[in-house]
Amino acid sequence: MASYAMIKELREKTDKNGNGYLDMIVIGSDKKEYPAKLWRFENNGMFAANDVVEIEYKADDYKGKTQLNIQTIKKAPDEMISQFIPTAQHDGKAVFTKLYSKVQSFRDSDLKAIVSDIMISNKEALEVYPAAFKLHHAMVGGLMLHTASIVEMAEKVCDIYPAINRELLISGAILHDVAKTFEMHVSKSGLCDSYTVGGELVGHLVKGAIYVEKTAEKLGINNEKVLLLQHMVISHHGLPEYGACKMPMFLEAEVLATLDTLDATIFEMTEAISKVEKGEFTDRQWALDNRKLYNHSLAGTEHKVNL
Image (cartoon, rainbow, N blue to C red; front, side, top):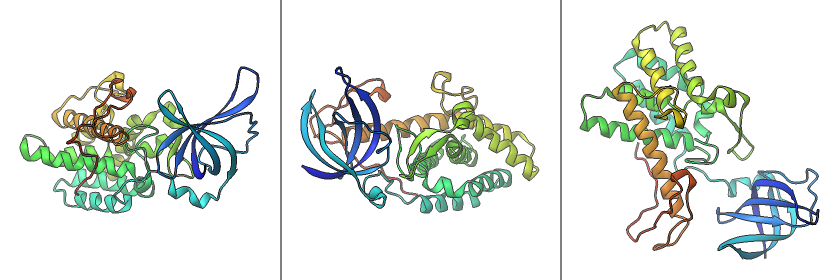
């Protein structure tokens, strides 16, 4: 069979006889991922992750999964890359505009000024960045989709629990992952292919809190709200073992951490069951406590926000 594909991951390996081969994950024209092998091949820099290639292959069953054994491979035009990369169903620029407009309606002038300044300073990256390297919302525009989902849930939660400060919670929701644009390196595909040096050494939680502090200083804002925003950013992973610098210590911080986990979990589960037929179980999902998931007959697969 012949087809086009995009190389998502590529490793050069050696078999037991000392022959080099390529061990790959490729994204097919159906946007599904497949393990692939190119036997007896010395790469020498010819192919790399994010290359679009034209391949001839044989599809085999390997441990219950489809594996592609590639016979021939050659590069295809880079312009074809858009056919293979996962993209959020909502345009990131449109979502950014809606979120920014929401901030402009804030009554709290300090929160409005800080959030607006940080959003505008990072606008171009925020509109297109994925939200993660490999896990939830790892797609072009995924960061805005994830952020918008949390903002929408936050507004509904505030309708139920009036003790929550709505503008503080929405501010934290918009800013919680803003420094992902500092943490991740984005390749020509628009997807994250590695973490930056700053991402490895500092991370998006700490850098996000620095953004808040520096922006507040620039705007001449020096009050408790600055600390509240910083705490929400550094605590939104909930627990230290999940990367939080502090556990949430006030209501809005706790709600933000809970909604962040909930949105990521819903996305991961929806994505996983979309890859199997109704009535079947997924493989074990290591990001979801190594559970198998069941795609029941009533399950939906659409991940949609209504901002």
